[in-house]
Image (cartoon, rainbow, N blue to C red; front, side):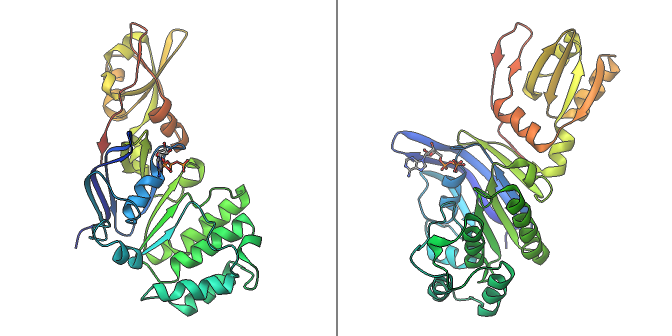
Length: 307
Ligand SMILES: Nc1ncnc2c1ncn2[C@@H]1O[C@H](COP(=O)(O)OP(=O)(O)OP(=O)(O)O)[C@@H](O)[C@H]1O
């Protein structure tokens, strides 16, 4: 059995003439919580829909729990808990009705567990879905995604549209119900602040390309801001520079491979300061960072790395 719950290798997807995913490669280890980070339109939902076998790729390999979703979409859906971004569901049904409706689709549906989640999430059983609040709708989606005890849970921007208190509560639910049970969780998000404390691993996708996959802690150790002189900045390989800003007689560089850059600059006496970055700042450096070379030209070459 592969160590990976999800594998994507060199996956491309076109919508008519629009290349939406371009050589996407990522690996999600079993038992980990994996956050897929990207701005609007980056390609998160498209990747997830490929994983669920809802659309087909044009190129590359996708494996979910060892299965090819294009070949075995129903087997994949039976074993995966999926919360779609669009939670419209069947608005005319009541909460208890949708639960009864969905249960037979899964061979491993656990009625007691469904009842427990419904109670814990304080969902009003006799209310029509269209009358639920956004937070209640997401929680109902979670019940439907989790009650068949899937070994892998894929959540597409689950916190979208929730207020900050709800999002915190949602993260707590996620930790209690999923991480606590050792499930693999893959979820997309653009709310980096909330991702940071709960994700073991992150991948950053932008314009259909995965720019980086890494353990969250490793990423924070690897990507930092070094403040140096223009002479020091010129010593750093431009391939490691995600962002460069000149401020007076100093240059603030956001770099990958911080340890090596730091020791080089400090050996040459050109290092002024090192600053830790949070996930938000690292993400920004990857997706909007500008590398300004010594001639003043600005370039941005995506670094396609997987850890
Ligand atoms: N069925 C489709 N037909 C044509 N283009 C599509 C289709 N689905 C997605 N796209 C396009 O693919 C690109 C990626 O969309 P996708 O929904 O995967 O992004 P996302 O990262 O999930 O964004 P968001 O955070 O806004 O949901 C967008 O440019 C989108 O317009």
